[in-house]
Image (cartoon, rainbow, N blue to C red):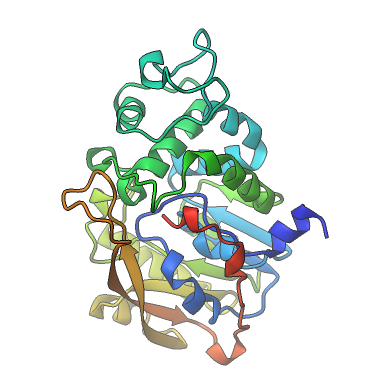
Length: 319
């Protein structure tokens, strides 16, 4: 079996850190996935579920965040260029200030340092889609919890708990292989849902109803957007398989009272401590409970039980 086929059908980690992502809920979610030949995520984010499950005949990742989509497209279509950007370049060609990387050999991965994080956040001015993708990727991998909202984007890398730069290239290539043939779009969710092919499975992980979204994301939902999403899904309820995850609130229960099933779910997730945090510790991290609703418009007894090969996951890319 070729490496391409292996990656296409295997479970891999998302290439990104992503606030509110479903990394720690993957097993629970995969246990509710029904048979399907078309798979769409209107709110892709870090894409943890797409990367955890086997690909099918048609796969689509969509997100309203154009910077995130640009990185997905760059990883899919130009992974080697992105890897090259994330390496130390000859000083006469480099956009990276030499004083920050003077001890790094040409061709070596850029180090994860607080100084470089500050440079990419505050000083670097991308002049191409590749430079935009490289800047975003570096900041995402070195910011606390992958928060990409500039005003709350703080240094948050730790060698023990974060994917180290030496592993970024392998991560990018593995991700690129899985993204081959995947449609990647930057559209409003109604456009995606209304045009989804009949019978498609949509995994829908919108912004939380009660969360302070403006702290974490560049784009966020209003209350009207939540109502608009519920109305859009209801009018397509008869022709699509819908798996919706939401925070467990009375308002959401009311908006989706028409659904076939609604499950209260909780799982452990971990807030990692890193070198830059106030209470420094060698603990791996403290565990918390994630509590959400799984909302389905099909019977869960139709679900296939996916058993992702977690042995293929790199422990260095957990956060």
